[in-house]
Image 1 (cartoon, helix red, strand yellow):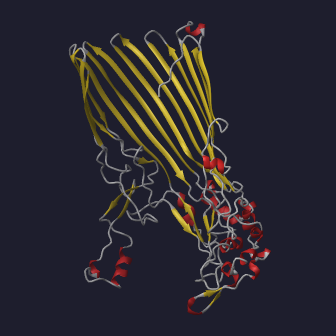
Image 2 (cartoon, helix red, strand yellow; image 1 turned 90 degrees about the horizontal axis):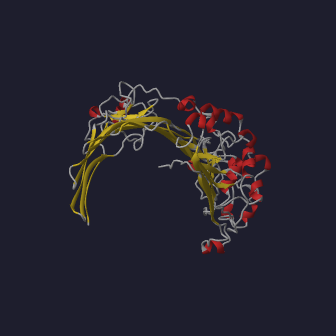
Image 3 (cartoon, one colour; image 1 turned 180 degrees about the horizontal axis):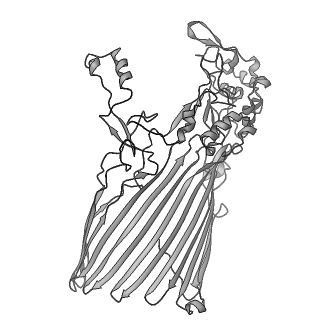
Amino acid sequence: MSLKSGTNAFHGQDYYFMQNPLFTADKFFRLAAGKPQFRLYRWGDSISGPIRIPKLYGGRNKTFFMYGYEGIWSFDPSPWMVEAVPFAAQRTGDFSALLAQGSRYQIFDPYSTVATANGRFSRSPLPNNIIPAGCINPAARNIISLFDTPNLPGTLDGTNNYSKGKNAQDTYWNHAVRVDHNISAKQRFCVRTNFTDLQRPENVRHSNAVGDNFYRYNKGFGFDHVDTLSPTLFVNSRYTLTRFITGFTPFQQDWNLAATGFSAEFTRQINAVDPRYVKLPNIGITGYSSLGGVNSRNNTTTDIHEAAANLTHIVGAHSLRYGFAYRTYLRNTFNLGNSSGLLNFDTTWTRGPLDTSAAAPMGQSLAQFLYGLPGGGNFPISGSYAEISKVPALYIQDDWKVNRKLTLSLGLRYERPSPVVERFDRSVRNFDFSSANSIQAQAQANYALNPIPQVLAGQFRVPGGLTFAGVNGQPRELWKTSQNLVMPRIGFALSLTPKTVVRGGYGIFFDALGVTNVHVNQTGFSQNTDLVASFNNGLSYVASLSNPFQLQFRAEAINAMNHPQFTAPNTAPNSTAFGTVTGEFAWPRVIQFGLKVLF
């Protein structure tokens, strides 16, 4: 990006653009359906000129400034899927209207489960499909009131009775400032900074029980200094910092779980993991609109620092340029996933008369939700990482005017990028195919019970396991010391005649393999606690909507956010699937060459 500097005269501009249905035709079918229309407004201004402080700088030609601002507001009513939401009567537990559609809509009482022959379980029909008021879970009573009311005709049983656009609404602004100062006839410097902000609330519905804010921030700073040491030698030094932040914040974040009907124990469990996890749980009800948000809370911050010094030296017919640069890439990221848990309500406990009976098209899952009996779910505890890589570089370039007709451009660039390192060594590094495995003895015993002829029981082995950065003598770097990247550049321009010029070039380039393209592998650094509502097929229940993980939470799950202390190459928890970084990379290389004739 290049920013223009100010001058001794003030200059400026203002602008405004508008894309509005009053002036812009929208899509025919959107208009025919009476849907909201796209809108966009964009405005900005800039001003530049001198900064005159006579006592300090002597007036003109010393200090200048430039400032620019831009703002954007847009509304995009992108269509959302058609879903189902509860009827008014159903919100109080009254599903009697469904019985008019046929007996297949019968709801069965989950608390009437009894064991029958052949290992099956049976339930009694719920009289008139009406849940007694005293049986409705307190949290379910509060949560069901969050649903929007139907806004489409739908079917008689409530299918496809609701739709709402994505309704993404962007608010964006950007500030850019640059100040130039001429210290003397030989020295000058400039500083610049910029700030951008994008906020996009989207997917908003169901009293904010669904919806999130997508955000992006960009901040930058730069310093540039030029020193003319002689008429044939000058030095340009600079430092730049770029910070880019992006992520999602669900509108359900910091939800008052106690006021919603959840137990104090459930809130305590979540806070023990991480206070950032507190939100309305993600609630899925089979056949109905889900609650809890479309996107999880996540954030990625990327910083790029670069310091560089460049010298230009004119020696006769040679224009020499040489210098160095040092870049540092940092990336910090977390993703909380379904924080506060994912709770699924299906027809496991409300179908009948047997537990193997077919589920009703609608109603049974919503009734199970009102009873507060989840069919399943989980609570994820996700890993996070802070990674860094560095790239030192040197270069030299010679533009040599051999004669009036021929100019050669000869250059060489050298880089030695470092491997990625995670700040707290939270990463898989490789796979050791020969290390002892902690499951060896048990695996051999199990195999000996039913071996195959091709492998004798005494020969059965299960060696190998993951290795982790910084553990058991493993290096912290995720691969071996980086290669020396040498990149020659050759070019020429030859004037064959006053009207014909031939130009050509050849160069070798390497792609980056640090933070920009390769990230840590965190297999085993996240944990998932599964929800079990009943251990005896519904004869009794150990979990409820109000306190879904009262038995499943364990100390090791609560402590999973701490860095695991691995003692062997194969002790990563939950490492059932993985991909590893190999011991050494071959850097992606691009060779470019070309020839052009101008006449």
